[in-house]
Length: 278
Image (cartoon, rainbow, N blue to C red; front, top):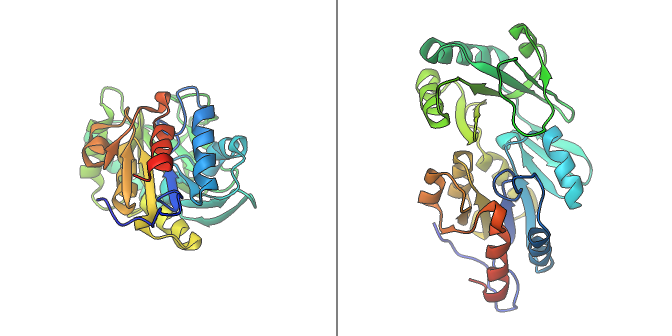
């Protein structure tokens, strides 16, 4: 996958765009961004690169992180469904999941694996994530509980989260894909996080749209990620870097494997590129 990069004879950074996932990649387990990572990103942007966040989180779960970073550029959120202008605090594009299709997809998966625990990410700048009582939430992110599944479909949604007790993430992902066919996109985005998305939607969809707005080519992009939902982004970017903690499928296709998110993997790679250009 290595591709042509820009000339670094002037001592600049060899890529024009740095695309980073958040959870398991830029964020440490305590949800913070280390000082070393901040400094390395600042040095790369000072050398002429742009940093773009590409995350599975929808905007409401991403905004506070961007604000903490002082981030004012474009961000790709909700697995590519949302393109957010952090500086203007406005949503530029948003792709929603047809609710009738979403209900049908859930029914088809449940016919195969049994009753799912369901959470629904509602669309918009302030869209809540609503969840059933059996859905196991992660971290300290805000959820709004519901008991009547009919409540899940009362507002536009950008994606669903599904869990099935007794099934591992990879097993549930495989079973869901087989059950729904091309009805929706199914991705595994992290521990306990299997998502149903609009068909054909991936992180690469949003990243390519953002790159066009920035006037950057795919060969000029370096991407960092850790989970299977990052695979399309790796396929689109000129160079893909897997974190040391990455899922085996991501490690298998990466151009490089860096240290883990806990050990400043992004910073280590950026520091090397800044000092050597390679």
